[in-house]
Figure 1 (cartoon, rainbow, N blue to C red):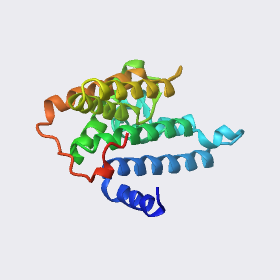
Figure 2 (figure 1 turned 135 degrees about the horizontal axis):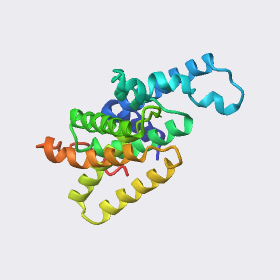
Figure 3 (figure 1 turned 135 degrees about the vertical axis):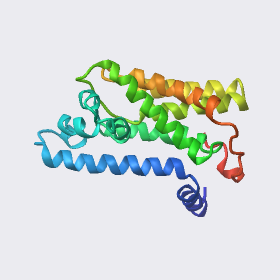
Amino acid sequence: MSQNSETSNFESFWKTNLPTRNLFILITVCYLIISIISIVRVEVNSFNDVFAISDEILKKVGQYNKLVMEGHVYQLLTSIFVHIDFLHFLSNCLFLFIFGLRAEERLHSWQYYLIFITSGLMGGLLTLAFGLNTVSAGASGGVFGLLGITIVLAYEEDKRRSLWSYSGVGVIFLIITGGMNVNFLAHAIGLVTGILLPLFVFKKRKKMEQPIENQNRL
């Protein structure tokens, strides 16, 4: 690939891929700001402390179920854009690009944002079932929502190859983001929301109008 071609693709991303780009910028800015605040307010004793958000900060900007039940319902939304550490942030951003770029080829911007936000909020609501002392954060509920709509679109276009391809990538995402403290309920409801929401809300999807070189990114 020539340098001119790479430059053209880079410019195209910043001009045309608005939903994925905007979410990436917002999530990145939030992570950087919260990380800086955490470093300033908490004593740094190890290298990991530089990249991990303190529990004190997470309870204020993430989803702390106790505060949500006391009326701080805004945390259901803000927690979507907060990440616990750098690996958490990196993995969600990686799969945001994988699923997001594919989804926005066939969705209007408002549909894209609706799926992401609604899936994230549903994940937060279901997280309340874990009890008052639970603290959670992350965009994975919204990202799984984008995976859900991606699977729906893939099934419509190629009922065998694409469906299994994206389902396989989704399993990889689940494994990478897995662990003892992972909110699998938020992942599951995010995926289900991404699959079912289009059936009830979307009447018409955007036709693919991008140049050939911008199609089939995945």
